[in-house]
Length: 360
Image 1 (cartoon, rainbow, N blue to C red):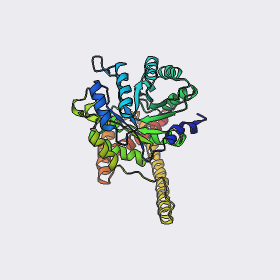
Image 2: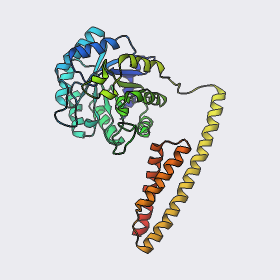
Image 3: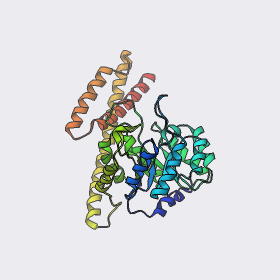
Image 4: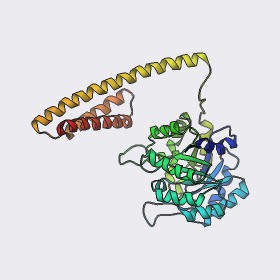
């Protein structure tokens, strides 16, 4: 993506004094519902009114959206409130209908991003458009797949591009509906700092009472905006009821969020920050040294196992270590999620070392 700087032009042109906000119901249910929510969001900081017209669902028989009829409701939203409109597209037909009804912003869902064939079909249908096109991360934590989708759209001469971070699926039981895997979003920002990135706390959390905290984390990480599902009667929404907030709750969330400065020119700030960063550098080097020592011990264990023809994986021992470290981590202020992730990575590296010894 050689011209990634151009991708930021659409966001810069809006000249906002706050992060971009995309809000509206998970699904367009009825014309009355869509218009009621839109009018309640009209005089807020919301920049785009979102509504799912086509809903990819896990099982057949679930509510899959009202279809093209909902696009006429979005046209009414724009006419009556002045809000720009946004919806998800998943194939060429969706794109053509959305463009025909002058939807301002189109996003590609996580289930579509996983398929280069689908992305290419959408890119071909959108070629040369001046509409804003945002790409949600794929369901699985694969940065290359995410960026590949953006590249296909960029190759179709679509200049107004961006991405949406909505978290990643996992088999593990966590407090999130989709784990954030913030490091993936951070890596994307580092590779393409001019690519606008929007956070979707609704899909990350799956719970409305967690939306504020995830939104604040996203803003602390210099995300450009938020996509928050909003419904006047969330508990009775036809889809994703638990993760939608009321318009008044959305307004309060936006008021309470703190926008951090990227930096400060004050001398005391920079001196203190550099001192703390130097301390982190020292500790990081110590961590690498400690991990290296641990792997040397794992090598020795591998040698003993090889001499006795014993299997590498010892499940009871591993479960014992994990349980102990989770408790130890919590006592030191470390989250269970972090400790699990860290020790699983350490354990996998230990297994790799021991397998190499056994195969030698």
